[in-house]
Amino acid sequence: MAGVLVATRWQDIQGMNNWKGVIDPLHPDLRAAGIRYGEFVEAVYDAIDMEVESEFIYYSLYGKSDLFPNVGVTSDYKITRYLYSTLVVEGWRTAFDGLHKRSSTTWIGYIAVSSDQETRKLGRRDVAVILRGTKASDEWYVNSEFMMKELKLLGLEKPLPRVVEGFLSMYTASDASKMFGDSSLRDQIFKEVNKLVEVDYKDEDMSITFVGHSMGAGMAPLAAADYGFNKPRIAEGRTVMVTAFVYGAPKTGDGEFKKRAEES
Image 1 (cartoon, helix red, strand yellow):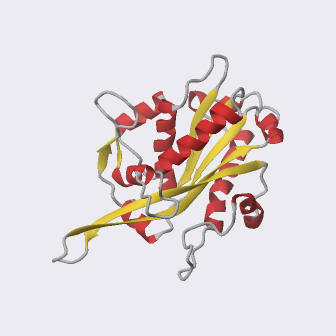
Image 2 (tube, helix red, strand yellow):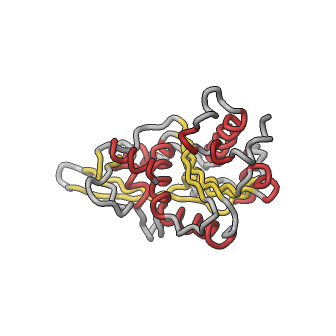
Image 3 (tube, helix red, strand yellow):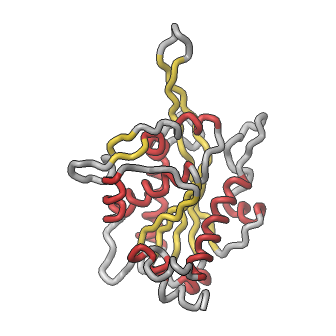
C-alpha cells in the first residue's frame, strides 16, 4: 500500500496527531519520507567546497539546477533558493587586546519544492527547507554556545521559551560586509517560503518541511516553530502544515519551547 495512501494520508505522514497510526509500526510512506529528506541533507555535505585553498570554501560546488545531478540525488523536486548562515564568533584575541568579534558566512542548505508530478503523488505541494550540520571551523565555536536565551521571535507573552544561544545566533545574525551575509537565515527562509505559499502556489494545500541534521537539526525545530507562529494568514479550506524532520538532533530549547512549538 506504500505510495497509494500517501496522497490521502499526507497529514498523518507529516505528523498530524503526533504520527498516530503511522509510526509503530512504521508506515512505508513515512519511511520513504524519512529517506527522501535524509538524502536531501546528504546532498549538502556532498556538494560543499571543503578545499582549504579555495576562494569559495564552505560554499556550494554547484549551482541550484546542477546540485542534485552532481551528487547523485534522483528527486522530482526543484531547488528554488540556496540558504546561508552568518556566524558571529566572540573571544579574546590576547590578554592585552580585549574582547573581539569576527564573522563569516557559509552555505548551510537550500529550499526545494516538489514538481507537479511529485505533488500529485504526495497529495500536496511540499516545500523542503534543508539545513546541514557543522562543517566550517567557526560553526564549532558558535554551536558550542549552549547557554539558553529567551526567544522573542514568536510574539508571545511571558514566560518566554528559551533556546540554545548558538542556534539562535546562526538563525538570526547577518553581516552585509560578507558574501551572501546581507540577510539572516531567518529572513531568507521567510522571504522564499512566503513567496511559495502566497504567490507561486497560493491556492494549493502545502506542507512546509524543515529538515536538519546535527547542527541543522538544532535549528530546524526553531525555524519550524517560528514559521508556524508567523506564517501568513491561510484562506479557509486550505491547509498549510509545518513539520520538522530531524536527524542526530541536539537539544534546541527548554520545556516551554517544546510546548510552544507543538502549539504552532
